[in-house]
Structure formats: structure tokens, C-alpha cells
Length: 275
Image (tube, rainbow, N blue to C red):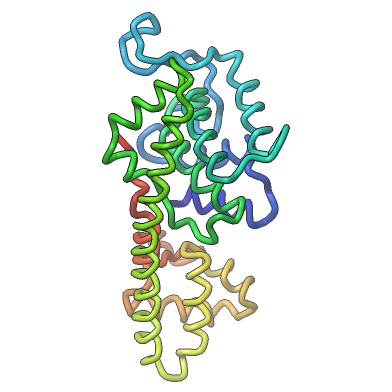
């Protein structure tokens, strides 16, 4: 979630969806847990293969190291509508296949490739919030997913892939509608909790509204954006912590970071890796 949030914040600040941003997101995605020793944020400098014990018996062998940067450069141009503009959903579907085929990192390509779909839809205004994910659709139809990717590589079956992909978009959109309703219900329930605070409710409401836009934030960041004092923001977050609305992440006395955890959990549904 933090990797996706980073990408969205950078784009909202005017930074384009580019190779630099892709590397930044990858570094965050792999900074802890699986893959943290696989050069986070750096394009691979060695040959990889998928399936089999060596390139000779592999199911698929991505481009050699010397071709990674040129291939990614061409993909970046495509993202920026060079040589011509591509409809958003088509762009997202084609980008995913190309990214997975280039396989530019040692690890985390699948996770980042699926995040790219959401980032493209947000960057081009098809989504105002990151609530449409295809990970669960891909996971439930895993064999079809890999077969369609492979048929693009071996048979040039782009049409078959796009039919599969667009079916996934429809399925994920229906699920996103349900998620949106649950998010609105959560916001409403939490507002009712805050109403019971009396005079302290006003500043807490402002903090709650802020967290709907930035569900993971530090006290100083919120203070700066809202124009409130540090004690006012800290008190509002402490009150919401006691109400079970937010959770403090660091365990520190200073430089604390808070998460609107129930909201983050809803946003994260369907982002599970394939395995």
C-alpha cells in the first residue's frame, strides 16, 4: 500500500509516471520482506528466466540485460503517448504485458506490474481513487492469466489478452462499487464516533477528513497541510486512536506516523500477490 501511495502522491505533485518513478515505487515495494535483497529500485544486471532450471528449458526468457533499459525506455514513451495517444484501458492492458515481458527487476515484477495498471488509470483520470485492482481476478484465473501472457509472446495474441484483461476490468469494477459503499459506510460510522467528542470534535473532524485523502500520515505533515498547531493535530490523532479509528505505526514518542487502518485495509483488498 505504501508503494502505491508513494506513486499516487508523486503524480498528484506533477511528477509523471516514468522510469524514475517506477524505480522509486519498486524500492518501496521491496524495502522489507520478500525481495529486499534483490536490488530494490534497480533494473536487473543479470539474466533471469521463468520456469525451468536454466534458460535452455525455461518457459520464458525475458530480454537480455543490455536490452532492459532500451525496452523500458520504449515503454516509457508509450506511457507518454509517443508516438500517439492510446485509450486508457488499452494502454493499461498493453503496458502490463510489456512490463511483465521485459521483467526489468530481479524480483517484484508481478506485484509492480499489477500496481502499474492502477497507477495508469489514476494518472489518466479514469479513477479518482485507487479502488480498482485486478490482482484478485488474476489470482482466481491464474492459469488463464499466464497462458494469455505467454500467447502474446509466442503467437502475438494481443486480442486474446485484451479480451481477458477487459473482462477483468468489468469484474473488478463491480467489486470496486461494493468497496466504495463499504468505505462510505466506514466514514459515516467514524463521523458518528467523533460527534460524541463534544467541543473537541471540530478539529478531529478536520483530521478525519484529511485522513480520507492521506490515510497514512505523520503529525507534522498533517499540521502543515491543515494549518493547525502541532498539539491540536496530535490531540486529534490521539483521540481517534482511542476511538479505534486510527493506529499509530512507529511506537515512538516522537515523529509518530498514523494510519487510518480500516480504510487502508479496504483500499488494499484485491492487491494480494499471485504467489
